[in-house]
Length: 106
Image (cartoon, rainbow, N blue to C red):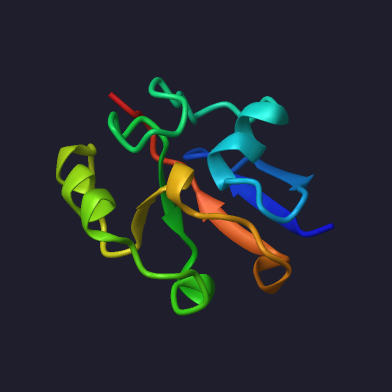
């Protein structure tokens, strides 16, 4: 099962194992990772699951589609590697993925 490491804004790491096909957002919710609010439940309509994909993984994660790119305009503290975790689907190729969480989602 692929693993994802979530790193909070203050450096606390939490590694979780997830079934392929699960979104990074759902993995965070299922494993009580704080920092992902996911108010819309993964519908890509609220941007409260904002995360930063670690630089080492940026090229391995599929690119954001247009709707996600538009929603990223509403996140606090956007960066070049900002993504909505609801739109990243875990696969075996993403085993070891590292995502960093912002200080605030709202």
